[in-house]
Length: 208
Image 1: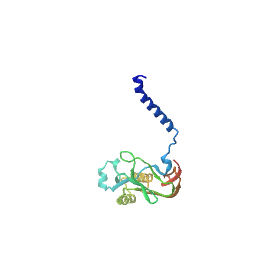
Image 2: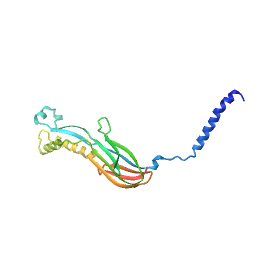
Image 3: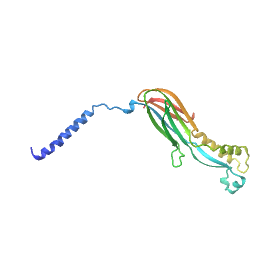
Image 4: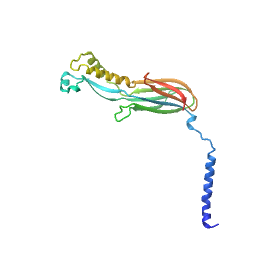
């Protein structure tokens, strides 16, 4: 056997050993680590509430504005942030601050969080609480404007008020809470989601 052959012999042997190991490994059953646990999955899309600071304009201030910009109630605001918490058997296993998507956070929030737990009977609680508060002055301003007949603004102010109320109705409530006691086997998933019609958190149990 020449020198080149002797040099190639270790390479060939290593290749054969590697192929044998791959062959043996193909017969070894793989364990799915996820299947050893039960899971709670939080998943939904919902529009955050808009938090506004409103001020009632005087007649003099209205007169200074162009006609198409005359609104008795002037509001500035941002979209709310929410604290999401998941508690299992009295222990907080997940806590996160979430807000709407987009640069201004004015798009629906898309929530997808998971937490593993030991199989068995578990007390599960999920809460979503608005972090930002609504100024009390807003409520007073709304009542003042609604109680007065404004001949200058006519129906436009009413339409603007209806639009704000519509946005409030579409936004997720200031606080949501879901409590349940559930028995989950290994590999099973408790799905907690948001029902926009009921405006509440609801749960579904199933496989992963």
